[in-house]
Length: 209
Image 1 (tube, one colour):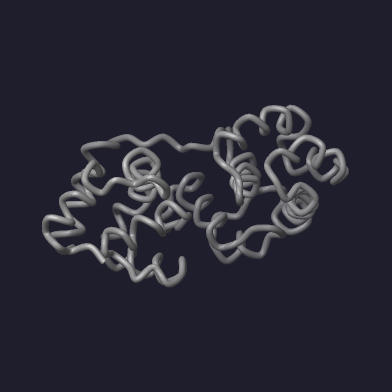
Image 2: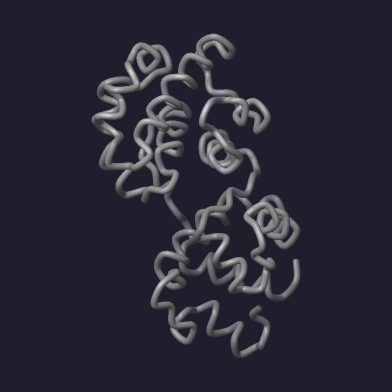
């Protein structure tokens, strides 16, 4: 790990030593559904929606019995309601038919589920199963480019670059630390590098991209 990566890691550890999981859930299945809902939606909005959804159905067996229309009526404020509702029902049925109603704990199997992409699968791997992965959302993608850790050409490349920059043992905690830091100190809009604990240091060192 080079000096820049070590500085970033130490700064994140100082500001967010114990980052909580932002999506409310009680088990791998409810986390999977919450992460699916978070696509193009804020975590705060998802947390407002999921209590009603999970009161209706909080297991694959219960969710598979619901109609997409019923689910859509609950989750519509999250955006992409019809698509997400259909995916939730389909993945619930898939879990029952192919996984004995249990959320699989490998990226390969998770990514085969309806509506589950690489980022969603990576979040479930880290937060539900504590297995090393490095989910890259818009916050992480933005900061990795600003901090000169990646070219920022794609989230795929950013993930590869971050995995090279930081030892695997830090990935699970680090991706949450970057998200919370980005929201607080390194936002997409009205960002003042001089007030950002990381950007201000890197600017002085002339190491930003």
